[in-house]
Length: 108
Image (cartoon, rainbow, N blue to C red):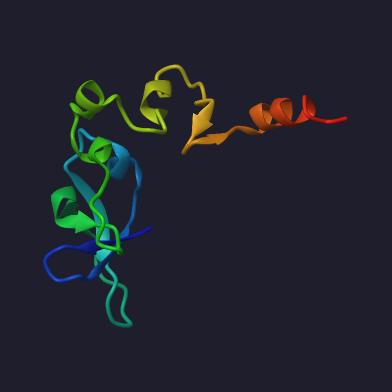
């Protein structure tokens, strides 16, 4: 995954997405993606990063209190970490089992 460094627009390759999605982590491991040589890994502040389109990172990735003030992330994946359960819906899409049950009721 690549993000953009806000200060100069350089691309940053994210080396581990777990800290990116964790709102209690303020920094992520990554490396600048520039030139022909692979750059050395560095630690980047999430506040200094954005999506390549310029869109800010989701608040639930940055703010530990986001769930209390905004109802949590749309994926709700963090609430299933402790139990090991998979969320029934991710990114607004039905899971395979939900899709099958929805489509089987509409079959002739």
